[in-house]
Image (cartoon, rainbow, N blue to C red; front, side):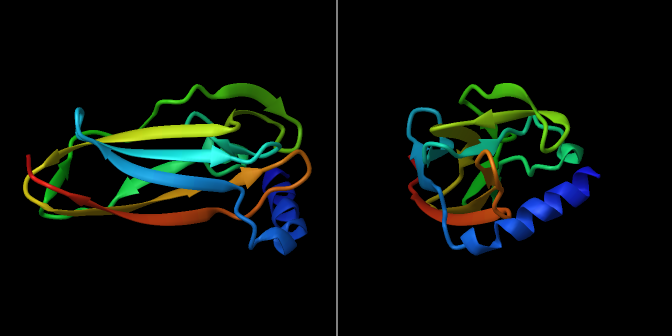
Length: 145
């Protein structure tokens, strides 16, 4: 039932596919050597936390790095923003969401100068519709300290 409802949301929102309601900025924190992803979410929209059960229906936000010889990922990406928990009748489940801002960090050890690439994948919804999952790639230049 939840999956069918999810498909209905996706098909109803197909006309909105070209609209991306989150703007992303990616950086390296020089003090912590963390890759930082910051999303600014348009008012009225929300995206889902990794705390949301994937079987509930919505796709949780995920920050992934592509392996490269110039760095080593030293831990998982961690959401630094505080998610809001609420029951979503559309998914018949408790979900964890972010509104207005999202921040995640991924720790790395820089081995040599080069570039770090990856992507953030997320699903965004408002009160009436959800857009299909969106992946935003990024590349950051790094310097060995």
